[in-house]
Amino acid sequence: MRYSAFRIFQQGIAGNRGWKPAWRDASPQSAYDVVIVGGGGHGLSTAYYLARKFGIARIAVLEKGWIGSGNVGRNTTIIRSNYLLPGNEPFYELSLRLWEGLEQDLNYNAMVSQRGIVNLFHSDSQRDAFVRRANAMRLAGADSEILDEAGIRKLCPFLAFDNARFPIRGALWQPRGGTVRHDAVAWGYARGADALGVDIVQNCEVTGFVMEGGACRGVETVRGTIRAGKVAVCVAGSSSRVMALAGLRLPIESHVLQAFVTEGLKPAIPCVLTFGAGHFYVSQSDKGGLVFGGDIDGYNSYAQRGNLPVVEDVCEGGMAVMPMIGRARVLRMWGGLVDMSMDGSAFIDRTEIDGLYFNGGWCYGGFKATPASGFCYAHLLATGQSHPVAREMRLDRFRRGHPIDEKGAGAQPNLH
Amino acid sequence: MIINHPLLGPRDHQEFVCLGDATLIDRPDWRDEDAPERFHDYLHLRDNPAGEVREVWYHEHGDRSWLVVTRDTGSHEITSVELAREVARRRGRGR
Image 1 (cartoon, chains in turn brown, red):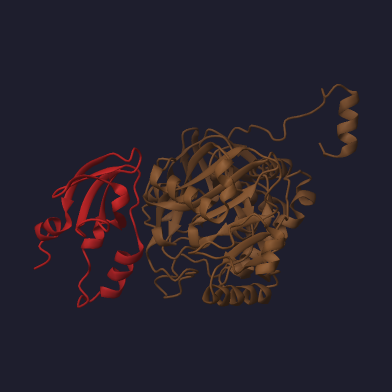
Image 2 (cartoon, rainbow over the protein chains, first blue to last red; image 1 turned 90 degrees about the vertical axis):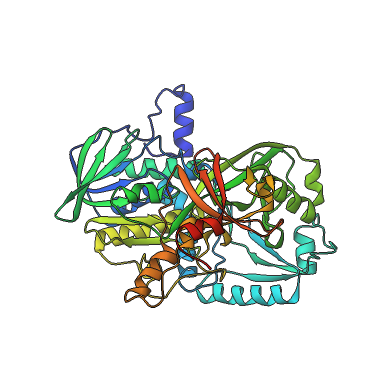
């Protein structure tokens, strides 16, 4: 069923009795061309682009719980392409371009809001670094501007400009950045993939891989064995656990990242605002709640909950940069599992096992990558070649001496 | 999380920083034939299990000792804390 204003009108007259489920709750068949393990945003977008752009017919997405129950429903919904390095920036710019056309492509309202993203700076050296980044972004076709202090005062007059430690001197500004309604991304891709014949199988945990002659030929699941021409793992947060079933060790640690939402407030924050020096970033949802977060907790965790010292640190960061936040009450906070890689960048690659592919290592920034991750993963699965913008996202890049280390922190996942 | 420091008693984990898996104590020997491969694995690959892990923590805002903490990544429960020095000596390392 195609969604449109006319459809709403028509259904309204008919008492809204004609709406159909947006996707089928499929049962698994015995064999597929491609089996995607993980029904999050990346897995669903991979399935969608495999069917839509690359014409693969028999595709299944296997999800342990229900689709959208993992990180695609637990993030802070920010999209941007303000990276520095050539291994990353063209990829994230492709992603932003796909976000811009996503709703028309999927015929689904994902509430893509390009309200812009601000990265504050406080010193000459930080400004120089952001000018360099802004130039790198432009070289990759992205938009970027450097705001001086007057510019950022006009955009966000409520900031603490004269903070003694971090006086605000200006900002890197990407007007095309913004936010997207995260749940709608999972639902929209699921609906789009389902319409193209993809089987979305929920409550279907993968418990092992079918290995024949050293090659991967399918998966064992709680709902039986499913054979596949190619198995595409896409389970960021739990990558190490799933790949260990195939005997692989990854350059990844699982960490917990916390996020917070306040009660609904009147519109106050016109953009996405990041205060990197103080480990705080914030945006305002369309319901009015301030959605904010900060650093990862810093130790390995699968608990989906963090500890109080980071809560205190994030709130201190918020108070330092925008003291008006002190009047808002936090309604909810939660933690999500993130794949922290050894250089802070992701992987979209084949593995040393024939037929087994891997997508993960998205650190705390997987949501913005959802469309390009799916598109490039589908490209790899369908053509056997890495997409040009994802060709540095290889699992062997540490062995070859070509990490993509945006922060220059080295092989220390909790510092990225 | 409360880390029961072997010398100082119970301390809030805020005083510490986590370095990572305790296998970081077992630095490969650069003179080995396969040293590049072993250093790659040592530096970059992790088991990263859900459940019990042994990690190296540093008491940065305290006595600056290195500890080996045994902790559950599912529940954050800490079951044992040892001085990293003693763990390393038991493994035949250090002076």
